Amino acid sequence: MRLITCLLLFLVSAAAPAQSSAADADTPLRRVEAALFAVRDEQQAVYQQFQMIQALQQIELQSPAPAYVPQGQMPNYDDMTRARQEQQDRLRSYTYELQQLFARHRDLAGEAAQLLDQVRILSQQGTK
Image (cartoon, one colour):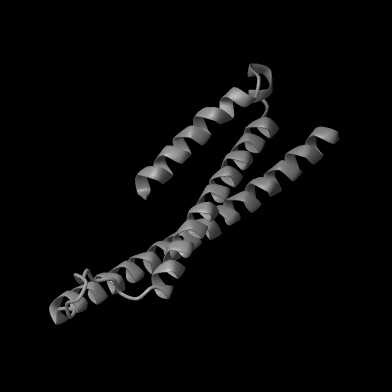
């Protein structure tokens, strides 16, 4: 999970400089805009991860705890208990990941708001 996030951040940070020319990269406004785009891209990636984990959680909640039982045999109590425990562990893991992703999304929204304020200030300074 963290590896995916790191890779996304690397790709976004590597692509951001390629989008602007060398002359545009020197202005503070262009740098802040590039940072804003990068934050928004990461925010979108986090939201997509959130949706995927949430879908996995819903599927897990809707399905009974699986345990392999050969046809014609009674389920083993220990196997059923183990399968139920594994399902509960997965659900706890999904809940934790959802909380982490929600917090990251909220933090990114705060960063984006600050960068947007800086863009407005720099834009107003440029028009004066």
